[in-house]
Length: 246
Image 1 (cartoon, rainbow, N blue to C red):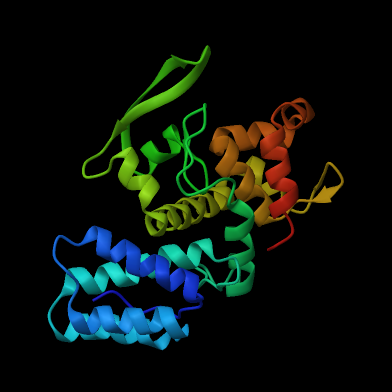
Image 2: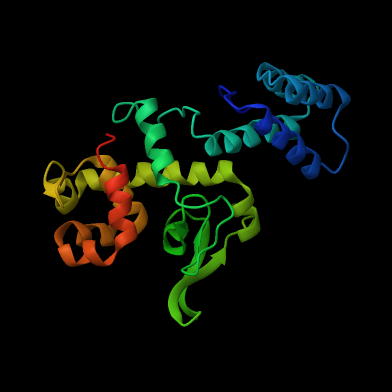
């Protein structure tokens, strides 16, 4: 059973959850669950969502229980007021991690850019390959530009990834934790911590944002070269927005 997470969503989020569960299910929702969700929608009582998931557990409906919890994670990711649990509390507390998650949001959950970056956090193909969600990366010409493309590893598809905000958040967490470990042992990036770049004292959250947008090799070039910082404006803007959180 997945751990139940604290819930902080309003009636609008609950209404979205009801609609999503109904559209996902091949069968009608259990009357008790449907009633709890309807009451939650009507009253905004978040505890009713908790009870709906627990009821599904008791009735041995693990798929429904998991769907409720997973949808809640996704809805909470979209809610800027929700406080997420930090994956590395020794580095960042829950409030700091939440600020980083929110500053890392660069688009809508269903976004696909001309450069083939996907979702809320605009993951690139090569990073999704690193994280074993895509494979066989290759460069192609798209709208007159060279971009990276690849194959989705089943059961993943583009449609499924864009529809699953909870999974996008899980991938962000895994990606950030990986980058944090690599920064700690990389002489170039580790040495940049505490230094002044473009008038800002570099912190780990700023470097993580640069890694997310530029990749690990790109981040090393970015910290060393003012020309890169001027050229790659989205990376530099992300650094300015996320730096100093932790």
